[in-house]
Image 1 (cartoon, rainbow, N blue to C red):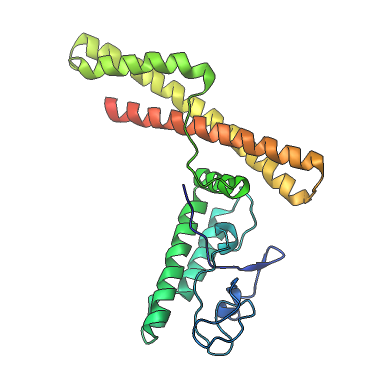
Image 2: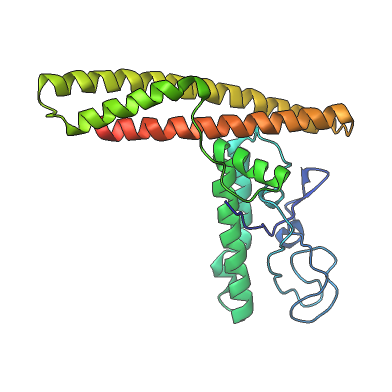
Amino acid sequence: MAHAPCPFLLMDNNQPLSHSDPRRQLRMARSMCWHCQSEVTGEYFCERCVKVQPVSKDTDYFTCLGFPRRLALDPKQLEAKFYELSRTFHPDFYQTKSTNEQTISLSNAAVLNTAYRTLRDPIQRAEYLLALETGSVKDIRTSPPADLFEEILELQDTLEEYRASDRGSDQGHRLRATLQTEQEALERRKGEMESQLRRLFADWDKLQDTGEATSQARAERDRILKQMRALLSHRTYVNNIVNDLAATIA
């Protein structure tokens, strides 16, 4: 999935800037103001004409919300930063501004919303980080775990049999009970995958914290990303089946 870039550069050395002036919390990659053509030295508002500046195309969602590229993010801190920045581009502040400024503020707010929706969910956050780190803009393709392949084929046959059965009959009740058992087993398997993902998230964050650029660190980085991609693919596949089972036997 292609992810739009995010406009808000908020941190120096991974620390939030002060809350004294919200305009100075927002930094950008542009070098010239769209309104007065004066040099913009990094802030998201022009110092000369004080006009809001549009989205930077080079900023990722983590930087957007003031966090480093880590996978263990505090949900409360993430939410607090989102609401803090949302106020900066709230339409109420731009009612008397020009059409250009209103359009820019709305566009910036929209990207902020997308950034927050992406990062608040651990799975989407990991998928987004994978896209950033590997340069891939495609969705992670789902695939079944190898050890579940035959079991899933049998499960699909049982599902089709159940859909074609008289659900009030003894056969329908028997098939439904079988599907419920399979659903519970797959939910446990999904939970195991999520536990493995959490361990990989911790490994990733630890590796980023060391900041090493050795060949061993690069190999470890590639290992983590590869395993994370495979687990996310398997987890999504299993989750889709669980949802299908739940909908079918509800």
